[in-house]
Amino acid sequence: MTDVGETSGLGRPEAWRGFGRLPDRTGTAGLAVTTADQDAHRQWSFEADGPVHSSPAVVGDTVYVGSDDGNLYAVDADTGEQRWQFDTADKVRSSPAVVDGTVYVGSDDGSLYAVDATEGSQQWAVETGGAVFSSPAVTHGTVYVGSRDETVYAVDAEDGTVAWTFETNSDVVSSPAVVDGVVYVGSRDRGLYALDAADGTERWRFETGSFVESSPAVVGDTAYVGTDHGSVCAVAVDDGTERWRFETSYCVTGSPAVTDDTVFVGSHDTRVYALDAATGRECWRFETPYEVWSSPAVAGDTVCVGSGSLLSEGACVYGLDATTGECRWQVETGGHAHSSVALVDGTAYLGCGDRHLRALALGETDAN
Image (tube, rainbow, N blue to C red; front, side, top):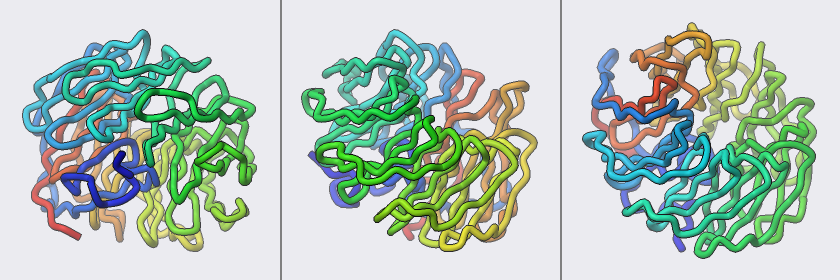
């Protein structure tokens, strides 16, 4: 099976194979958007039967996304036409991961599903003891995912056999990041865990001081994660010690996007922050009208992020200059934006609370 942690074997290099793009969850694309200021515009929208909180995956010419209507959808990436839908028994807020012709996704019905990417037929399902809000990471033939039954699961990607489980002390809605044989995942027990990917043995646990619903991003020797107390924590991957901590004014449930030198993260305090990856020093902040639940995505010198409130119908997706934080463009989407942007081939794909999956044309792309 393809190791999606590597660049080889990905097919189109700009594929966005799951939440955060790859199992390291860094949210960075392989191509740079060259959109002129104010040039972003709606390309198409697809309407589901419920809000779209799931974040899309894009592979080849297909977009895969879940909906609160209980379905996983496959949609034509160019036209927005539905190709198939797969029914689960509850909301699909988990974001799909697509590897080797199979879509892996969780459901609030408590199951992790493997679905044929072409036909939408079920290959297998693993039942957990709670809702699977966490988004799967797939690498080296294993699917890693958390559940609200307080457990992290490692599952054989081919046949659904459970390889190991690891119990925390509260819900696991955080999505695992997997890098160099280690699984990094948060829990609402206030811990960030590092687990051996082969057998689930705990390597270390970092006490954050608050619920961890954010998903960690791992770059080099550091894992970055947000907390419900409003902190962004940088943690050494070798021993779990804190490198730095930055405080926002409210919850950070979205996940950081990380380049070699900058951490981009949104907060429920309505701001998007850029932080120095080495020190945690604030580089800039951008104020939106709404809470930022969405996790940023980065392509070259552009940061894309959604913002929207549960209490109003207003929502926007923004394109920000990665160096200055200046808003280059914004597009109103309608409905709160909990979904995170997938950036592929000059198009941003985003789910919205008004039941729509939207494609926004951003312009051409240049290789980095």
